[in-house]
Length: 227
Image (cartoon, rainbow, N blue to C red):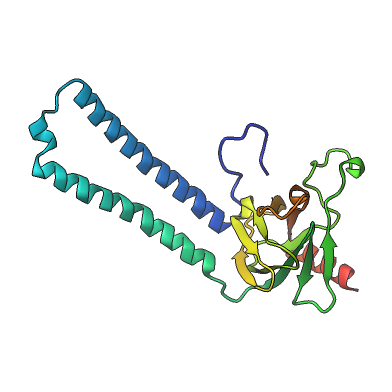
């Protein structure tokens, strides 16, 4: 989860988020190279080392036409690769349905007969010692670690958005429409997210908590909850 005064991303806990972090670093280096080149040219102009003949030369026009095209290709190729990876849903081990309401989430484990629950934020006055304010819920989403998960997302009333930064997932919940996403957790842990679409007065009070566990723990949890 995010820490106080944190500057970068949260620790990646899925292959998609790892790719997004790498793409961010790649794009940042490209932007740094562009800024350095522009600063260098500005310095030359201020020092009057570039004449009007240099600026109006056809070679320069050719360079500033081709160079931006190369930069766009360097950014577009890895970006498209990640977009296609995020759309891949190949034989998931578990399908989870998330339904957004004002202002809580309902979860249904569609692979099980009777496994569904509502997830509400725990009020500040009822928080256990050491818990995170505005992030803890009464029922967490429990999933098996290192298993492909498909999540189907919709809403019951207004627009919502199911987002967990550590997993690289952010999908809009639209009334009357089913959107889907997928992810794989690479380690056990508890990952926090929030509704990322302004949905009313209590928009900031519908957190998301995903708990990644070993498969045996998930099997025991699911059998206990569905019985």
